[in-house]
Image (cartoon, rainbow, N blue to C red; front, side):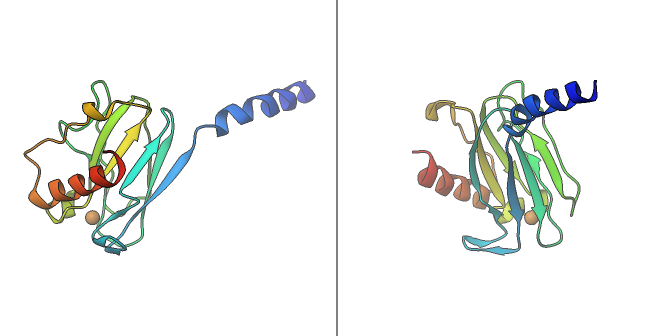
Length: 142
Ligand SMILES: [Cu+2]
């Protein structure tokens, strides 16, 4: 029985590890300027997770209202929390650090292969957040 379980776990473990955990740092200063997520853009597969690691104090991460795919769940971590969340629904996700949202602390996540045309940035974002999204899109998407 023990041998059978061992054999089963060896067979199943590659399937489990196929779901990647991508690490994102939350910083006060980064290569792209003040208050970044690094990286600020990721293309991942459905079922992958993002792990948000606060390198400096006072950051957290949450979804932006109206900027996640239909059927996806909103989330919000706690300040200074090392936080991991899974992305199952294909599409574009706009994420923000609420305390530094007006300073443009946002990131874009592409899950699966949504069409570039389906990426619609809400127009009512803080100016700096909008600016950073436009730069992220220009650099990575179109
Ligand atoms: Cu922040």
